[in-house]
Length: 458
Image 1 (cartoon, rainbow, N blue to C red):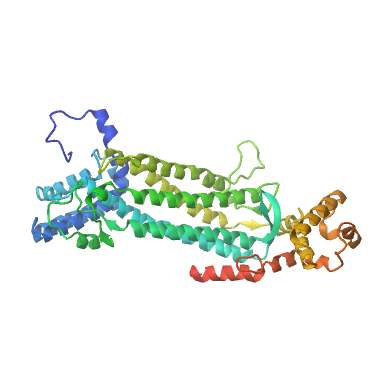
Image 2: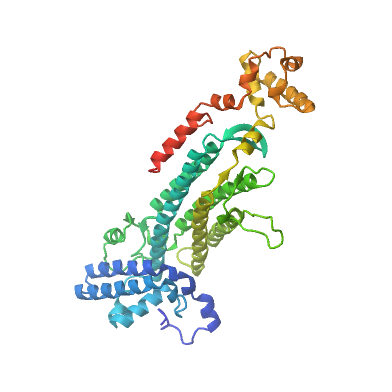
């Protein structure tokens, strides 16, 4: 049964109906549509539109329907109705007869769907926040396990300075913490209830919208009915949160893909998250990570889609807004899956410490330490930087690392260098000197891990 039709004298073309109907994807709002309807039944009963007995009968029927759709949420997708609202109302009328036709008094599908989406997003945010925390915990425990494993840090994909694997892992914990806070803020901003705004001008009945909002778990009711039904900022913001977080996950994936490559061989991924080749028997491909990297584009696409849909859209509600759901559903599903897959990748990961240490010792990553040594001898840093550059060129020509040059060789280029230079060129010295907050010194890495373990309840 359509929720409209009295104005029309012809049936809708089947092709238009298929093009127009949204139940095939907005069935996912079934629980929220029923919860909102229960709240609305209480609201209209409070102002005498329906009796207390009618309210109780409606709520009992809606709760029964909620049990049914919860048991088989996918089963309603092909039920043949225009949207989730017509599905719920038709099933309600089947259960309680004409009483079911009273429920829609004073509301519109415009404020109904706006409320449904907010309720759905709010529920999804809780799931996503939990997944972010789970990944943070896995990263923190991985950081603790490998907090002293030396590896090269990179800029421009060139070995730059030595770090430890624990410090690398904690960098992503920090990124995810910002993701968590952004999502929390998005939840706070969206937790204002539009129900009671009707089509665009507000409901014609004196319902207590603030009480209705609180009944549905919102912090407050919206203040402008036009904005209420046309607002999809929360979708754009949640998709922005998802896009930024997926960017972080994509960088995480790319790092591990590089570290897993035959050229680096810093680590080995578990067989549980890799696949083989149909032709080359020796292959072990990092498919989980490559899919995380690839799926980032889908989430970006959803963000661009909603922003483009909303661009220059006139107030208040337009059918364009039906396009707000499919991208949102897919993007949040994808983000959730990628968060959980990232956590799975960390299980059974094996770090090849001999490879990471050897790589950290190569590439002249202790050159900055030599420059700092010269500064300690009174050489201005800019001059020290130039001198060390010359020494690196000399060492490359000799096929030696800096620490294997003799004092005589050092002094060919810089006479102030003496025997006390060698301890400064050791990796342990390079790490220990980075002892300011956030640095790679062992005590700083341990402190960062300890802080996050406490923060995450580990």
